[in-house]
Image (cartoon, rainbow, N blue to C red; front, side):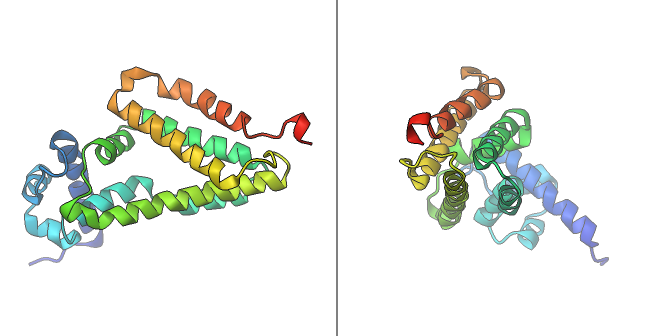
Length: 207
């Protein structure tokens, strides 16, 4: 039996993840078995177990394939002299990618609307909650930098402001992925984020 090359193994892994996206979106995570995913990908269940421990592990890898960019965000923030501009660009880029990238949209639709974090899926709930906490921490750090540069009002709590950004993003994502015709996300995203950040900026009466 010829051993698979590294490239072939990686190709198979991505094919399985691509198939999982399609099946999860079509019939929901709880109603999808590894047999369904194997059939969609044109591989055996054994091939799936070669790459993933179980369905929860596969689902987690599917999410991380499109969302795991924390290091890039941190590097970008450190290079910015304008923290509020960094927050604006980061969040608007995120929302516009959601609106324009079919894979991004598909994965977030699955995460928000087609997965119940119970039974076997409950084991990855804490991992995804931790990702959210790291994102809030990143935003909070940027808010503190903005305060040090006298961009952010002294009466604003950086943690509360960061949570507000997260809540704003979550609300836009949930509603738009549920019904994209509700509003044009690409057009609305910059103005919505600008409006929120404008309320945090230093006013003349604050200085």
